[in-house]
Amino acid sequence: MADKKMLGASLYVPATHKDLQQIANGQLLGDVRSLIFCTEDAVADSELGYALFNLSLALQQMPERPGINRFVRVRSPDILKRVLDMPGADKLSGFVLPKITRHNFDAYFQKIRGTHHQLMPTLETAEVFDEGEMKLFRQCLQAPGVREHILALRIGGNDLLALLGIRRPRHLTIYRTPLGAVISRLVTTFLPHGFALSAPVFEHLGNPALLAQEVQEDLAHGLTGKTAIHPSQVAQIEQHYRVQRSDMEVAQRIIDGASPAVFKMNDSMCEVATHRAWAHGVVEQARVFGIQHGEGDSPCLNPQAANPDKASQHD
Image (cartoon, rainbow, N blue to C red; front, top):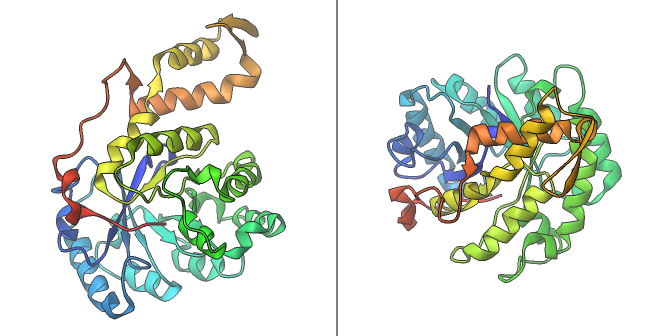
């Protein structure tokens, strides 16, 4: 079963990609921990037949890869059923569902009921701007037998901005657009009830400083994972998921059963009852992504990352 803490930077790959099989089996982009094979926005209507054929070949020869999450982004319940019927579909972690609301979710969910597959519904319709609708959708996801299939909710930033007639400016993070308030509201609607949220894509390549700033804001909002549109973004994103050594030390002290209920450390007050959940999250994050040891300690880019032919698609 996929682990929301392991999502990291999820890379979208069109199902029409000429190297889909090599990517799926780890020969290419082997360092990417979360792959999403897309049959929706990344694939033209005229190419859907080939995309499904190409995907079916990849799934047939795709080996088991523990610790690697592999999903398919489907474009309809019918396509979900067709993918489930493909040999090798059992090796998938699950599915990304597009443009999900409380009205169309069940049509998708009924297809995977009784399977091990997990779902990542994408919030990218006008209903996202309606707090009442999001609360009703949350109730839908909390239904018996449903919740355990929900890995995370993905925030479709580009589609939401498109509904507002806006494109993300090149010099601002997503939090400096009208979506900043929307994301904050989604956080308070879903996170307290145990649902993880994945951050929107950063669509501009070549601006690592702004990407770094946005990832820091993602983390400050409690978002788990982020969509990457190109392999070169994966290491840039995930280096910020590494835990600061000082945070790790504080987290371990909070978890220590011998610690007092309240204590001072690194010029901050630590309250065990209040900060315990944070501390366990930090320890788990360090287990997955490692610890920041100092300047220059960033992961190496995959050798394939510089190849623009490996570019993928987006939320």
